[in-house]
Length: 592
Image (cartoon, rainbow, N blue to C red):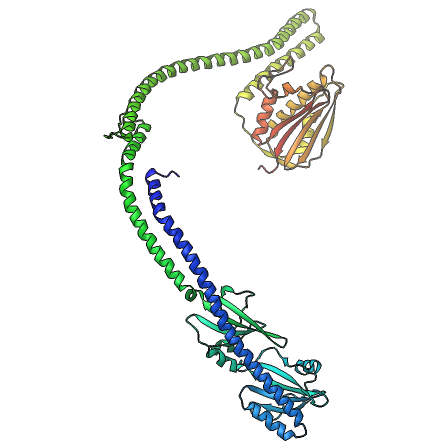
């Protein structure tokens, strides 16, 4: 695509005006983006840490209460009623869903429920992790968060060991099922900016606490990223996400603080908008100024370009109208001078072309006449040579017949008549070959069983004494061909093979005729072990009137090639001097 000088100059003006401003804007925007990103990450980290501290304090308080209650239970183990009252006081905080005292064997000893139920929903804890892990380690056990089936409220089981203060023996477990709803209130108390949110996710990615409790109750999940950065937030919107991780026993939970990218980078976005407005203003100013300057430079060049196009189209009467004293004026005058000289030169050249064309036509006509005479002479000489010999023989035969009639020699008369008949037939064959070669070949195909058809053609042939013909007809193919024309093509090839085997010095006297399927082609192969064809003659054997024999017109292989091409096939020749020749007639099998 060609770019005009006008457009190039305008682009240059625009680049000079906009590129510096654009670079400054990009650098400033990038710096602002990085600064805001780091600041937002820091603020989110501080908010997440604050929430984490509150949550950790909440669980430490719960753990302290349960530990203290456990110690009291061990001191007052002889006073079950007092133990019950102590645990009932603990249940009044509305943090616990149930409290269970489990003995050494894992059986329920005391049971309290937030709903006021005194009968345990489960009596045997001997196989549960809350009992087994606590009794084994002697440490506080935190279970994974589970969600109440009906309300969807998150709950966590905390188990503390009950250790005899005198003997140090673990005598049971105090199990508390803690309602994490209290943490929702802790998060709601955190002040957040527009687009900010903080929430807690358990190790499985399920939402445990959020300012919007409905999200927790719906069982929303969030894939916690491994590193702080910009990701899809809880609602799917791009956000700056910071994660604070903490452990309760063996359980991990994540405090996630996020702020939407649109709010976090509002300042950077506004800065980009301001820079965009400045770029548009600079673009308009550069366009107006550039247009005025470019017009002064481009107008003469445009006029010269239009004139040059007209001249190149053949209108040599056009002239450049530039009346200036600068370099463009000199260029215009020079262009006009060159156009005038070119017009004179073309006028002279046209006259010479007319003269040379007339001479060329005369020479071409003479050349065609000479070529026709040469071709006619070659054909005439060939026909005269080929027909004169049979006619001479016929003449001799007639003379012999006359002499034999006088002497009443019947046998001699019959020999002379046979000789005359053969030579007359030879003349007829020569004329037929010439007519076949010049006549338009028409194919009339019919269904033919190839192997049987080739066998019949071979049965019709009479081979000279000493020449043996082998057959290997195993293609098994039936297809549509013009049997008469294909017969002519095959006989031409067989005749050439017989002549090759009859030559003096032929290493063998045997030919083989084969039929076979080769890929998607039918192949009819005629193989002889004669003298072979030299490489320099192999390129000419399909030329009309070419023959290496002392007789014949030289049209046999030309006619054969024409017949095969009419069948959409061809003729391949492979030969090696001293070993023999293979001629392959092939036709594609998929032709209908």
